[in-house]
Length: 378
Ligand SMILES: [Zn+2]
Image 1: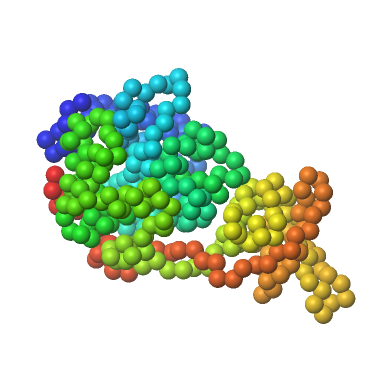
Image 2: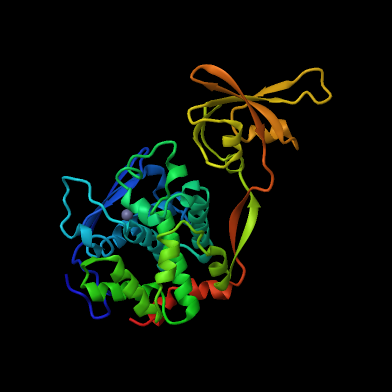
């Protein structure tokens, strides 16, 4: 493949085909060297007369952008271990945080740069990714490099313990890219775009190792980022998201969490029934003794002043606030393997979820503006 004069400004393809299969219920994409095969929900396609892209359509645009970005990042730039990819067996690499994660960072960012979404919509997408990672206790158990290596036994074989034991190299990898980009920009020498272009030129658009990625960052930023890579990619330390976002005009506010997050649960609500899918490590539901597979039937309130305890059937987690009011204690009634089990539940206070707010819109647009691409050096 030819490397363009500006290190990849010209696509490494003459023709590219987007194959989109719109179905009743489905979502996904697979990258190829000159095409992508995509599946989406019909209801997420743009409607006639639509003025602003609806959330479902923005998600679809992000998927299309993701697979197209793979044309550079994974189909040409690719892990050295994948230089000769064997489709007949599992292929191991610790670099999926870069190839899937950085692609996940650029997929939404390119929607912003293309003018398909505005700064506020872009920050909502970043916000969603941050919340997904923060609501995954497994981020404190496994580094994103190890999560990459374990993809074949964990990411591709998910069960009810997945969020407790591992972290997604897509979402956390995207946040590593975000942190590196914000850090590079804050230091004023370059941006992640420059590092990506260096990597493309240095490798000739071919196989790369982590040392090559580190060298590209150093070339872009004028110093070594080994300490950042060690902490953000190879350890389970929290990413310095709040301080880096603040440097670019974005505040991180604490909002009260939704009921599932407050309790540390992931549930499916349908037909007036609450099915427990995941019990998150360290949460109130785990302390109460909930287990994946439980059907949460109802709650009993303490007798407090009444002759007897009062019980309510619940059909959605939102019902809890309705029946508990300001109360913080109840007995949860669940069906487990057809047996009725009572669990003492204490609702925690002060569980919060981040909300990103563009506080200094000038700085935010400096980071996100399409004009910033032309301004950075090739
Ligand atoms: Zn991908």
